[in-house]
Amino acid sequence: MPLDGRELVLGVTGSIAAYKAVVLLRELTRQGARVTVCLTEHARRFVGDLTFRTLSGRPVLTDLFDPRSDEAVEHVALAERAAAVVVAPATANVLAKAAHGIADDFLTTVLLAARGPVLMAPAMDGGMWEHPAVMANVAVLRQRGVTVMEPEAGPLASGLSGRGRLPEPETIVEALVALLSPRDLAGERVLVTAGPTREAIDPVRYISNRSSGKMGFQLAAAALRRGAAVTLVSGPTALRPPSGAVFVPIETAEEMREAVLQHAAAATIVIKAAAVGDYRVKRPAATKIKGKQDLTLDLTPNPDILAEVAARRSGATFIVGFAAETHDVAAHARGKLESKGVDLLVANDVSRAGIGFDADDNEVLLIDRWGGSRALPKMSKAAVADEILSAVLALRARAVPARR
Ligand code: CTP
Image 1 (cartoon, helix red, strand yellow):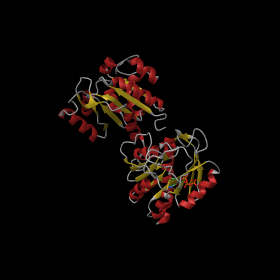
Image 2: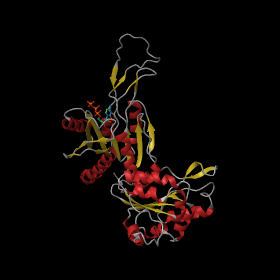
Image 3: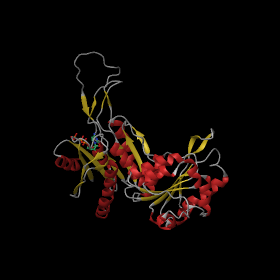
Image 4: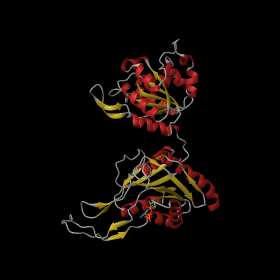
């Protein structure tokens, strides 16, 4: 997990949204981060120390001069140790202090001593976000390299409506993970396919498969985090496309083929995680099929999109395929690597419970066309996604000079 073992400082300031910082803290610790919470005096009016102390398992820091707190005298060490400082919610007041280098409590002092990235998630009532003073402070902070998120629009605590709501904790975590990730895919254009395809039998029925799209969506999210421009072509899933990706929803294999061929030409890396239906119904019925008698469906093979992309590619496009197997995984995967002409093949055993189709984890074998093969242990699909992207970079670094 990207936050595993990371030392973080979570600063909470005096906004009604301070209660959401509790949810944020829980999520950060769930993802393995070790978090020290700094509350401002104003924040303590909204949420008590005890909640944060219990969830973080550490003392909560407010006062620079608290003689009971060792950390209070060690604020510089704490700020230096932290992989990142997150301020959520960040009021107009703390943005102003940070922009001007004012350090009159624990949190603002930590902000001056911080060495790592700083992420601020603003929350403020109607109209304040648009005030020229706030805008100017935000501009100063951004220019200095601080990531100031955009507050969300919607109903505000005062009853007004507007831009000023704290971004959802999930969105703050995403932004933090992106901030802490290496940007080793900057400049790359990654095309990912995901999910199942659906082939119509009649207007209400279809043939599909058990793919959830999780692996492909994690690949798209990981590539975005690492700085790539990402296009995600996906069949129907229950997942939310990662923000920042160009999302192309499709249903049938033929629609996927069209979308992929259109976007593949511009891509530097193509990753085909989709479970494309091998067959479609030759002549789908125009109206709902009625009756209780036996029914035979005439099926015809779908085009093999991966093989076609590989055959049409320009020399510089790196192509990753997947293989879903139920037996003799390595042998079948090696066969697919060669027959489809891909650079890297990710093979998984879809007959095993808890990995592969519809699971959150995966255990895959990476086989490349230069003869390498590596079995990865069982891990989350997010971690598998990072492994695949790192393998692509490593293989390409070796292969590109040879191709020229
Ligand atoms: N694939 C594709 N177009 C198809 C079928 C598969 O692009 N019509 C791609 C998948 O996205 C995946 C790879 O080919 O990257 C292998 O898919 P898989 O379902 O494992 O293999 P098949 O080619 O369908 O072979 P088989 O059904 O014989 O295992």
